[in-house]
Image (tube, rainbow, N blue to C red; front, side, top):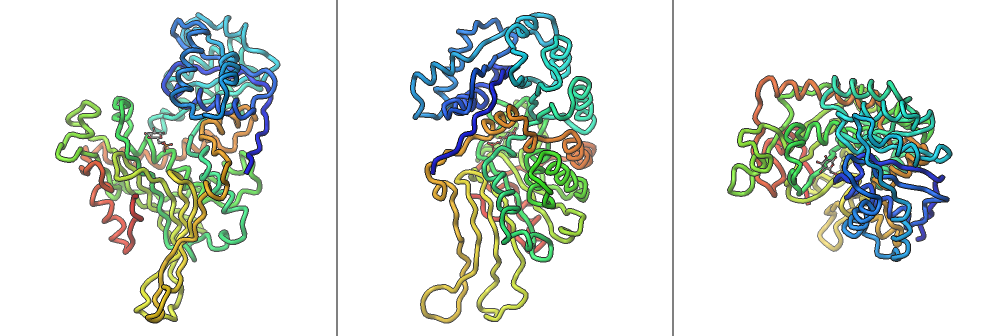
Length: 481
Ligand code: BG6
């Protein structure tokens, strides 16, 4: 299958924090892959901006190395790489002072699409927004891109939104949640709203429960300082898991357009039932035989930050009343496995008798690795011996079905959407605030009570209590593998 690449208009993309880790691992190699695919039309340019005193040649060297390490494109010729390096510039800019802003202004073209990526600490968002407008670098058509963490709680998120809103309209602000750029996450919408098959069953009458799991094998990996201030609730649940929940649960938007989709997502978050913090399972990993795994990694022997969360919630609306949603995420778990399982109810009457056992259909949407979907259906176990039933997956691996088509990384797709001016896969300010309004009371609860997370072994499926969360309801998590 040949992938269709639709070129974007010529653009100037300025990356503040252009020599930072995200830039090196994701943004720049991702842009290179889009360039290789021929997606840049006309004269587009990428301008690294940071405080350091780099020359454009130094920056090109930095990008060349980041492509070698993270580019992952073997099919691109050396000539193409040289052409990509050629469109790079570097400007040394001081976010808080005057240094570099006139140099930047001399480079950025008024007639190209202008996008400014704030790949810096949120503490600098206000300064950058102010500098861009006061130096006439950004007009009403310019776009800014911001990353999570978008706030630490509702109060700080509101303050950040206000700072950005003082200089930019909402239609210019692209808040990235990279989960929305993942291929399968978008496919979830295609499957739900492009087929007749699923939507009639997509409600509490037919769905027993939904599980969302984002399991990681990595630990905090050198991000201890940030992570220990955040924990899994802020780092993963408030944003990535919440977005997955929204896409699974939302009503069909009238159109696949930014505000139509985001309005529906917002309604889901607002309809989420509050969860009592006592009922949330918090865990912290310990290395096998070493009780200090997480604490050692973050350098705080008394840290009570969680690296694992499991919880159950409900959505109070007509579609979902009575269907629980179970969410779980954690670091240093048995396997890297992110998936959503929509588990359907039992058939209303079994004509096969009790000995046939209990069988349920489940639609599994696998985000990573091995993106794809499976639908568990019940069939007769082959061979003699009577009517014994068996659940087997109807499997559709995207890699096989779409053989040859490269699946772009989430960042590549999202950055191209910024250039196209399409906000559908970006979070709106009210969505972010509503998500914090739901998570804040939970976090406040355990902070006030000085709750200590339950230890779990690195390489396990998380704390025992998370299994109990399901067992109590007569259900069980799908295995992490
Ligand atoms: C980031 C979190 O947003 O997402 C990380 O800060 C986490 O802690 C990462 O590891 C997971 O992303 P992915 O794409 O690897 O599932």
